[in-house]
Image (cartoon, rainbow, N blue to C red):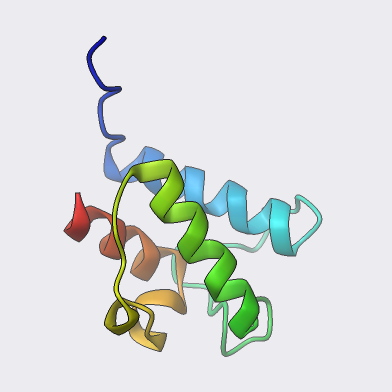
Length: 88
């Protein structure tokens, strides 16, 4: 059976948004834009970043390193999307 196609950037961003909203905002996606600060606003704490990284690895079949887990990569949905896209 062939692997499922990798989602395009729009679908990738939407899937990450849905995960973050479900895990950290009781499912509320309103106000959660591509550039909304996640860590620096307090939506996601350091343990939450680990949860997101675990989700990204499992869902998209990628491997993240400690260096990947940075504020630049993990503070916004866009940063997370870019990180996943760079690892596929």
